[in-house]
Image (cartoon, rainbow, N blue to C red; front, side):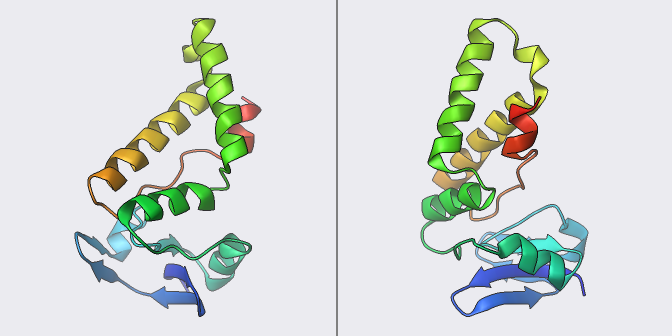
Length: 134
């Protein structure tokens, strides 16, 4: 069964729609997420996604950090991506790394949204593996 799923201290929760301060999530907004809620086509897909992840809660900044971490972007991976970005920029070759640029832009978007108080964040455009293999 599809819907919005969220990992909490009590396990994975499901809802058809989610309404919270400053956001609403409905089936028409499948690409949006908020307050830890994300759309999945099945409970199995959600459980697989949340395996090994931490529940999202706290301030908007903490939720933004958790959103990035739940995209499997640890601090070490972020440093690797920043190094790759700087090397690519120094070589004037950013146009050859569109996935890297897209992921960096996504990180800046999540940061700006969290600073503005939002708890609704877009999904990562690419995985770490996709970016480093580009």
